[in-house]
Length: 440
Ligand code: DLL
Image 1: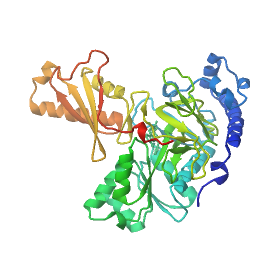
Image 2: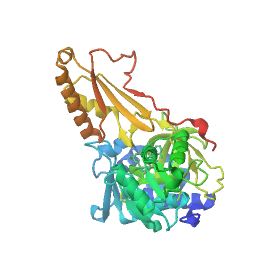
Image 3: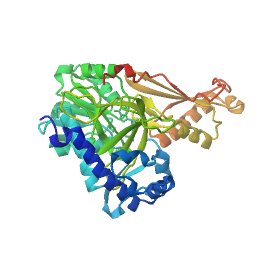
Image 4: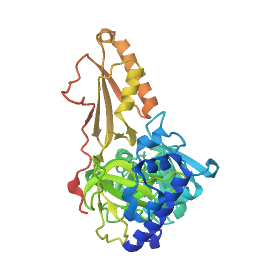
């Protein structure tokens, strides 16, 4: 089996463009008529649905950002009656004004098809046993790959994340052939198997579908060796449905974007200008079929390059590089999206001054996450046990806000280096992606 949906995945470019144009015109009318904030944004830009006659008019539409979505939390951008929705998912790592993504049954179906396409591109068929070790719940990773695996007809193991002993037991006992999880968890599973004396050739896996966080070619190499598999990348955002907006094929050279459902643009993050193919810039998505939570020109903040160079797999969909960075300050730590502003909010609420530094590193393919927080003179004079107690309380408050627990270190007053310009809040020592790895 080469494709899940051959007609779509190998469609000639002129047909892709025609299909996108036709769907875009309808989508713009749908949001204009059913979603007040979109209508307002379009009116502010002086655009009406009549101005959008095809993809050549896409640039006339305003951009949509995470801030727009948060401002209208929770239902402002819902474009169908709530009774027509069957599901929500939500962004990780933010409390309060999270982005809530709504789905009709049609939206779930198309999302699951995108994930099924990714599984087939990784060599999957209905004979496979798919172990889904992404988190389930509000996070889109588990539900997305779970749905894709069902759609393809695979036996699906809904493991969710964590409980490594049980993961390995089920993998071995039920003969899992495809593993879906974050790349860091895949690397960890590889190490755990080794510690248990299970050689790469002795596990039943043949492929893995890994995403939700940045990972390098070196990490791919490590995972492939330690698990004895081929490791494929998958990309997506909660806002675009979840994983499966794009996925790698056997070539492992960038991710094909499902262009029958999404239009991708690359823009200059500072000016918003649309850049030609091959330029490095911010990825922007327009969803063409999503009913409940449509996106017009959504700014992902992920920096990458697109390429239409022919791919030997036969798919005609444009390819994107792995994200090479962000145009905002969001960090992805152990698969969870973390904004420095959330950390600052916790510190202020707990009565600390905003003198802190976040230090992120990757040791043995696992993210380390430390927060240094300066004490004031009074606190500094406290007993060691009182300070340790405060550190523990801060870890709990951070965990409640972020969904993951950092190591918190209360440090002496004025010990964090002051900078002359903007404070250096984040020291990210992980060397994640370099553009030299992209061969187009
Ligand atoms: O991470 C959806 C997902 C789940 C993708 C499972 C792949 C697999 P969010 O939590 O909303 O959604 O985070 C979206 O994660 O803007 C990227 O910065 C980052 N990201 C997602 N996939 C990749 C990837 C899910 N393959 C944000 N490589 C996005 C690098 C990725 N970064």
